[in-house]
Image (cartoon, rainbow, N blue to C red; front, side, top):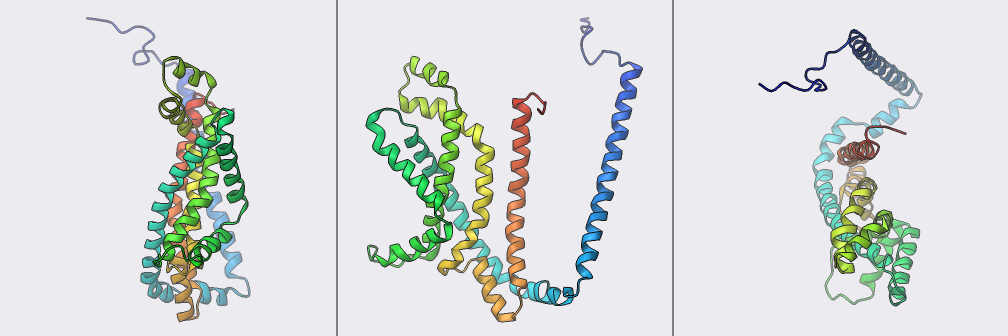
Length: 291
């Protein structure tokens, strides 16, 4: 029979001091949880009592938190919210593709690529500087006004174009930061093995860059989730436009609150996933330690 080595954690004896430390940490953890719950409840109670005792709370409650209006307006708002989800899914795919393409152009080396680098840099400067709402107006009303397209395209299509143009500039800079963060020795090793520049980027550099910038990309996706509501200014009947219609119908602002809650519920899972992944990456890079 083979005996386990003395250093095996499964057979290593635990001292009385270590047992006391574990018990102390357990008590401290339970105490921290209780304090956190109590302090949160106290703060929530103070905020709630402060709000409900304000002079205008009754009028605000009637105009923004009417349950009957919320129930009556929800079907139409939900139908518009589905359009937001479609625009979000399509825009996210195109943003990733064009953002990576622009970042690749900005990282090209050699004087022959100067025009492409300058064009990519100008693109990112332009669309990071323009407010999204102005891009929506220019794309949604300016391009159709040129008469180049014989058919009338839906406003949701132009919303996708505007969102892609704007967010590709931000995502391109995130990708570029990730590409430049990869150590030059990685490229040199790949080229010494006979890989071309394209294969080096595709097989070596870009996969490492994506892993480095995934948390930042997820934060940009959270921003994109809420900005899809701006397509309503083009006339698309999304959740925000549907809420506006229902507000005019009931003369009550509760539909806007309903639409806002839908966007919050959409964002919360992504936000929590981003926090979890960021903590995981930090723990892996720092081997569990936080500097």
